[in-house]
Length: 170
View 1 (cartoon, rainbow, N blue to C red):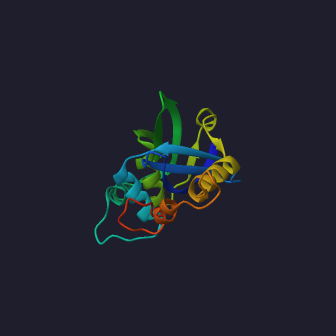
View 2: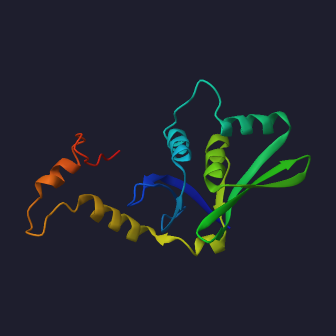
View 3: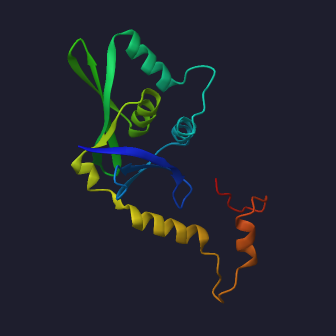
């Protein structure tokens, strides 16, 4: 298994949320498509935002603690037809319990509980080189030149956050 960390949550070219997992050496990144609600929760967790009431992942952490179960690790363990799968490893009374989960829920739980996060070698075969991902994203976001080599007037509006359909970088 390969230890990973959450690099962040972004959007793909179709503006669908992506969870970005990166290895400890920051050489490979695994983009996983997730739902908007899950993306918001993970973003809030990464930002250190505290809610006045527990979210589902906080609740699961609390319930496990009250039942004497420890969350040992979260593993993104498989991919089938473009869908990723994860497992939550628990230990209670020296017994290992493995629970299936969506990767986004597993990651949110890992962030809520401080649990280590891993991917399997099989899943790692679907990663992309980190340098390539960074280069492509920089080119996508900052290539404003039109065909004539000048900045397009429309491109300037794309990044100023106005109501004309422009992009806003967060």
